[in-house]
Image (cartoon, rainbow, N blue to C red):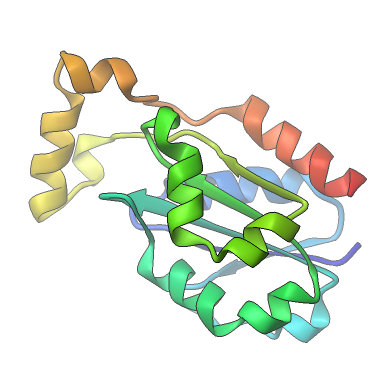
Length: 160
């Protein structure tokens, strides 16, 4: 299976997860969507990943999905997001990935997220500082990525 792992990362968490996923999937190619535009005709399977900020998928990943929706419908697909609020992962997927793609996807998962204050700038810095404080928001936040979720993702993708 010839797999493209296309991702868009703001602070590096999605990129780190994409690299781990590549190591778990035979014959996979990485593509940073913020730097290059892949030719989807070369791949049997396309995995798209992006970060969630304020409930929205990274703009570059979202645009890639929208522009290539018809091509993605004809391929085996997987989608992953990195987000800190795991109780909202499903709604983030439904909000940001077209329903017909999500329904036909071999796998769609959240890998968790990281809130590294030093990696943030501007408004993101202030929001991260607020969310990272102890209290109600911190209890709901998953402040690390899940290698278990990545392993399960790779296994499901290989099976379907």
